[in-house]
Amino acid sequence: NIRVEINLSNTTPEEEKDKTIGKKIREAEIQKIPYIFVIGDEEENTGDLQQLSLRERDSKAKDKKVILKDFLNEKFPQE
Image (tube, rainbow, N blue to C red; front, side, top):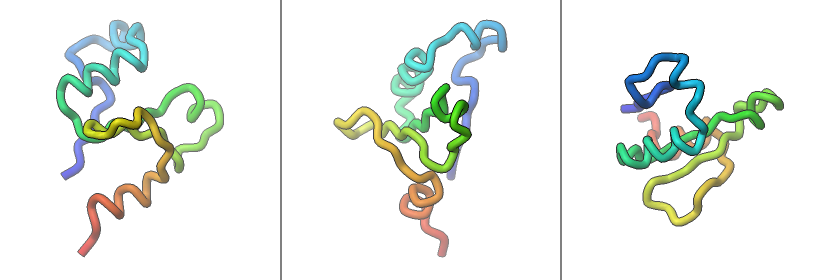
């Protein structure tokens, strides 16, 4: 049960590119999405998509770096 969204609103690609990462995160928080992975300029520039910034809805910590594969195995273990 994993949902992935790139465009969090019903906007055109032209309108979407004007939104900041902060605005997109806020929209996800309003929608009560439990886990938000942020892939921004830093990850794009370094090419490091193994370790991503994670924001959890019920956590007081704003961002933490996690290894995506480890996170998925922990939250959604394979039987």
